[in-house]
Structure formats: C-alpha cells, structure tokens
Length: 205
Image (cartoon, rainbow, N blue to C red; front, top):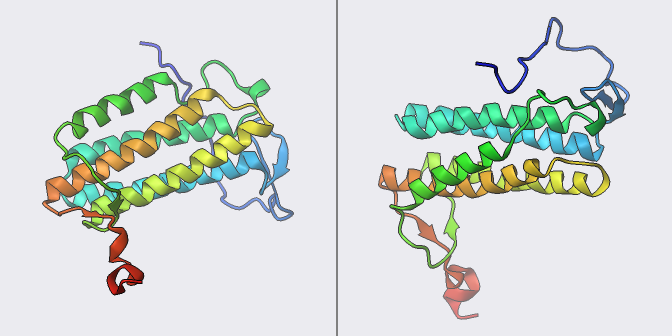
C-alpha cells in the first residue's frame, strides 16, 4: 500500500554547522530566515511541545498507562509532521510532504469522546497537580495552546494550512481530557478552582 507521506531523507552527520551564528536558520526550501521570525517561532514551539509530550510519555510508560503512552507516541510523530509543513513555504510544499490532516483531527476527537464518557462533569476549572502524569499532560496542554497562538500569529502574515490550527486546537483539548482521565485511573482526586481559597478570600478581604 502506498504511504500517504514521503519518508524522511536526512543525513545528519554533524550537529553544528555554524550557519546559524548570525541569527538565521533555513526553511525546508532552503530560504534563510531570522530565528525569531513568526514561522520559526511556530515551528520552535511545536518542537518544544513535542519534548514535553515525550516526557509525559515516559511517565505514562513508567506507570503502565500503556494506552496513553501509545497515543502520545503517535502524537509525537504527528507533531513532527506538523513541524515539517510549518517549516515549508506554501510554494515549496509538495503533495506527499508530511503534514497533519483532518484525519488526525478526527482521531483526537474520537479519543476524547471515548475517554470523556467516564469522567465526572466539571463545575469549575481544574488546578494541575493531582498526580505526576496528569500534571505533565496539563503542562503539555499549556504549551500546545502557545503553539496554537504562534501558528495563528503566523497565519496573519503568511499562509498556514487551516488543518494546522485545527489540529493544535483539538490537541490541547485532548491533552486536558487525557489529564483528567489519567488522574481518575490513578485514583488521584482532582483539585478544583475555588476563588475564596485565596489569601483575601480566607481572611474575608
């Protein structure tokens, strides 16, 4: 069966090249751009998210949360696919270049719906900290939101595939659901936001 995306064609023989010492880096098409430009900011934040997802996957594996670990590994591959298309100018993209599609979005929605079915309804916001895995997934969620913002900002000045924003938006929601699911499986009670647990609330102002 023909694969939808091309396999990577990389030969990383030396990590440093000195080409970035003046604050520029290369896009997939070879164009040199500033390292603080909006396209690199979006790519870099997606890359950062991938690292945090990897950390959460290690924790999930250590806790024998095999289903979540498998999902997170797939998400890491999808984030690299997303980074590939974000690192490419629209005119340089080709049909079989790695990217995220509506199939990835639909899969996230399906997993969210299934895992959310057994979770209690919420009457307030959840404070991160129930247990290690759920907290790491909450960290992933916040970094994902930042990646989404960076991608939306890029889309205001350059062309961005709409699936990229949809994927990040849905992934942040999925990370929230997975965090709640992980705390439930661990038997760790969720801590909900209570405005009057603040210093002023406890002392009566």
